[in-house]
Image (cartoon, rainbow, N blue to C red):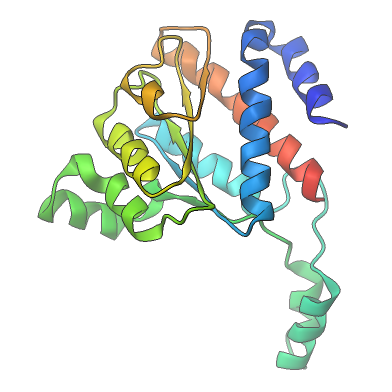
Length: 211
């Protein structure tokens, strides 16, 4: 299926997202380009959006809907590295797409919050991890979460592409996004309900491209 066909299938289930079509396709192209250039996807958010960042990273780092066999050279390398365990690893490991949820670094998050400022928890990680070919996927229902906005600003300064997933108004974050997917609601719970099909659709398009 093409990206357009995958988005069309989503819209049939969630017609309210039709106005987000071009932004979703643009975001998928940016992430695909990032992975093709050897970059990584960095994700962040707070509360439910933090859970969404973890969720999306999980869908990309292992099989989502398609089988992802390892390349033959890695299989052979595993078998050479360990005659005892190599066959098991070669048959059971999967290809992953490098996606890192910045929300999951518990000790680092608490250290930054304690030693620096809670508004810097994601920006500091962008300063450390971020490279030019990477993409920041910033999730905020309001678009006004200061730690997410600071991450977007830092990402722009380091030359990363910034994709925002937010609500109808876009908030402060929107001005720092190369692509802003603004779902059609101003209510937190409804925005979160729309966010899931959006990032699942992105994962489908991306996985379809590589596998």
